[in-house]
Length: 180
Image (cartoon, rainbow, N blue to C red; front, side):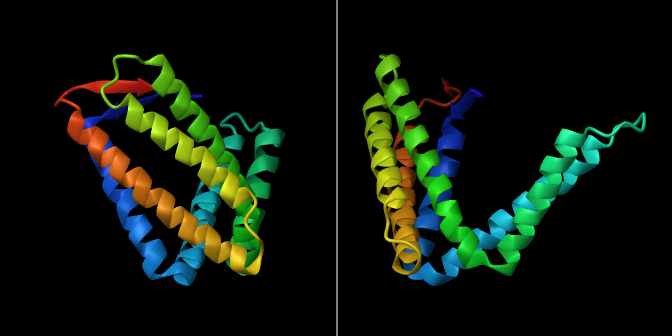
């Protein structure tokens, strides 16, 4: 896992962004479902096309493994546009796994860095990330579960945003924290 360098500005920016997403999840839950699906589709399409281009080396050799992965990525991205709801349901399990892994990492950081000024907040955030992942992973899918997922994402984003903003405000200017 790549280390993440957290700065005061970075924490504040991700907190504000998370708050905006959280508010949108509550005000436009059905619309946010489509927005998430399309944004992920666009991201995956761009990344897959770039990766496919990279797989064709300058000396004319083709890196078949990378090319096949990029073709699969393009297919999945196109499926996101054709059937965003079905892909959103499949994506639910990946989001749940991500939240659980993030929560475990945040708890580990909170327990290992004793002099971190906001380690209690980070530990609480890690606990809620794990809880969020479990709730999403077992949400009643597909119909009502996807709306439940959007509302849970909204709750998580609001909580994450508030914690990030508080942690950012507690940091001194120029101070950084390296998170693994």
